[in-house]
Length: 293
Image (tube, rainbow, N blue to C red; front, side, top):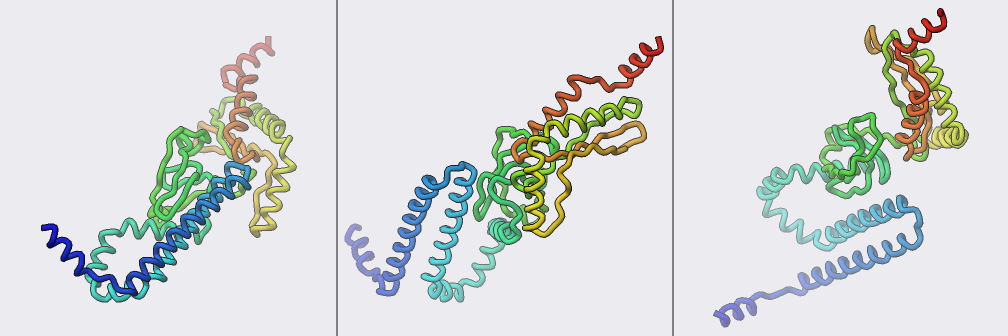
């Protein structure tokens, strides 16, 4: 038995061309690994900001993967072309079987070409919403934010989204203005409540808490307008009125906020306004009765 195995192995001949391709492939893989180790060490030492460091490490890794794939195609291109001529039927079956994988690769190319988002942005795809912490050719990883679309707190869960979703679903980028964003939240009232007093109190509180960074936010938005060529809405705080039904009234509060402090500034304003005031109709009627007495 052992003699038969030995005879079989001795009958296998490795041509010089095939051996050259194997050596070239080994050199390519070793070079990619060395480049990744050197670049990762350099980024960890040179970049101090954790968010920027993670962004550069991910981008460098993805770039080296693309470089490796291109090198493998260049090395084995002739053999692959020769092989492809004889396996056309198998290739068709392979495409059908790996449709989702191909869609993931297509989605990766689509989001990269359209520059839909980058590391650190807060996005929403279908029912998935969160902060992007990693992305590669097959999937995008986010830290979930919620619950719902109006909450800006992390839930502690991580979601891995296949890139195939980016082919068929729209992407909402909530951080396209980066350092400063326009944050909007809704405060519902009944028509008989003292919504005028609430509107004034919300406006005063919003101006108070946004004042320390209002000028910086305005300059930031102006730079974005000049750089990207589209109009950015004014950053001045506003409280507008919306009537969803005949018996309800919503106050729409729109304020500028630092990208990572949307939930904090919203909760600060709400706690201050409703901690010191009662805008219900019952309270309003009691105040009017007291004045009449």
